[in-house]
Length: 268
Image (cartoon, rainbow, N blue to C red; front, side, top):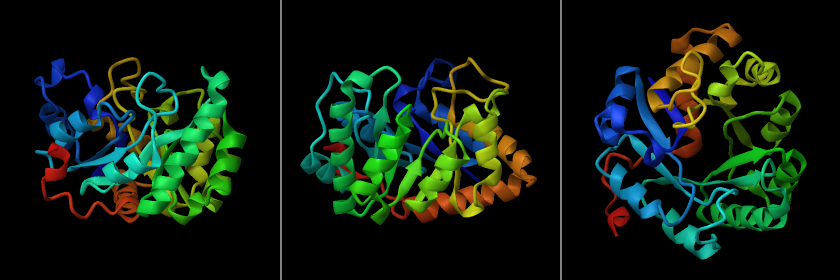
């Protein structure tokens, strides 16, 4: 059993998948992927994401606004808390900091990041954190805002072992995407090799960042199997062992216990 701990089902290219997310989930199930977490990136699209995934009990959700999303409605603590109470919402995010293209918006990103952390703490739900070229500020704000109280995950990890260690100290998990399979990802591979088993997750971030040998194609949840197989080989483990470990970690962190019931609140 595998879990894709981070994907964006509302952004998949559905044309080769039968035109619906059901096709993507069927392919995932055939690859042994029995559960996915579809992560929100804005507030405007969240109701549609909730409705489209409502028939699929294997799909968990988050609610949040990506740090690079500037055109939509800004997050407020009140709205995140209200939406975050939906049954199938297991996390707040994705949130965080991305200075790669938007260093000029650093102040705004930091404000939004703090709002998400406050909402997560009020709800008692973990955070999904995106960080890119913002290492020091990400760690500082997590510490200042008491994020360790709820913990969470640094998703699509692209840093090194030193940052992974600091994330562990803040009660965070670390998740590896298809980037870990790239030839030049030596520091990421080193972190994946050394990370304590009980804090390890795998993801696709689909439709982005397809793993080798699918690099350059539109990613999909089924391909978390390739990520998991690569990480397992790095660690000298079997795929079955790593799948069991990462699935248990997912359930311990996100506690998706009520997903067998369609979320009527999501239909509103």
